[in-house]
Image (cartoon, rainbow, N blue to C red; front, side):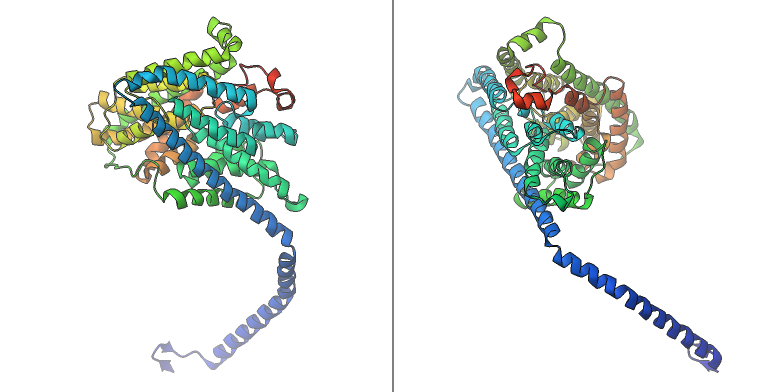
Length: 488
């Protein structure tokens, strides 16, 4: 018999199909009966085991608090650099006032840090790396590197450095701030939680990067690439949830906006191949040189300047502050601070910067870090890289619109060469400028420049972490630590 839908199955075939269906349903029901008790037992156990849920809530609450602390840090840092601009523009000769203001405040910042919280000196990332790599640290020793007390001092000291007009950034220090804020959750967790200080510091450090740059993916990749080389992350889902929650707090305050706006990328053509390679090579060599200078400056050499730094650190800091102020005068203040405004102007295609801006920003950032004050190099590295891309575009005769991709490539390249984290660099830059259209170009430049930098230096943060004083000795007697090494 034929129906509208085709030939009707024979009666025997229909009976066979019915038997198969009944057998399948019967087997499924028996399987469900076997699984059902196990399901209810697991659900009952989860509901009764309230302590794991409390532990998770504690971690997430600290993640939200970390996001709030980073937001406060951001607002305070922005207010500090704004106040410096007011001082700089005060009266007809206000910019010359910085020749006194910058050295004086630099000395005050260094004195306070050395006197009260030597663990807050430097960028903060080496301290977190050291705390994560050394599993034998006692709580008091670990607190010397990362704790809420260190985090609060770090916020005030970095903001004071920006108020002084030094060429420093807050994003690197935010890593130590986030780690110190999150590690405080450990005292409230149960012994059965399985969440240790390592996981909390990784979550806090990555959350700090995510909230500071408004780049949640960059924060996660930073944790994987820079902080967890020797150990896996236990409770990775909880760690990632903490990073995302911290980033959401920043988004709730500042809005879902990219750090440098939206990149106006034109159609990428083969005409940018040679300039792009040149940007990656120049940024790789200069970034490797910058990292080498930072490490050598901290380690010290058997020369007169290093000896002066060891014997008279406050006088040396005053000299560094004066040098930074002079470079600021030469660039109408463009080298002061993290360099956000000049970088944004270049990316928007209307930046008018002095021809020596890139070189002086390089030197100002190095000298600011050499002074020994708490200083990050993340954001200044982006500004230097943007300057390299802009200079190569000018040398290649490209228009302002065509130079924008090279500026973004320079940012990713110099950051990758300096920090030794190419994946983190290109993802952070991609998220900061909403540059998904040129992700392959950013990736290629970051990898190439990082490889070139390895010919000049080893990873900077690992070397600086190795030069830190023994936390056990430093925690017991901070004054006995070497002044030269405590400035890492």
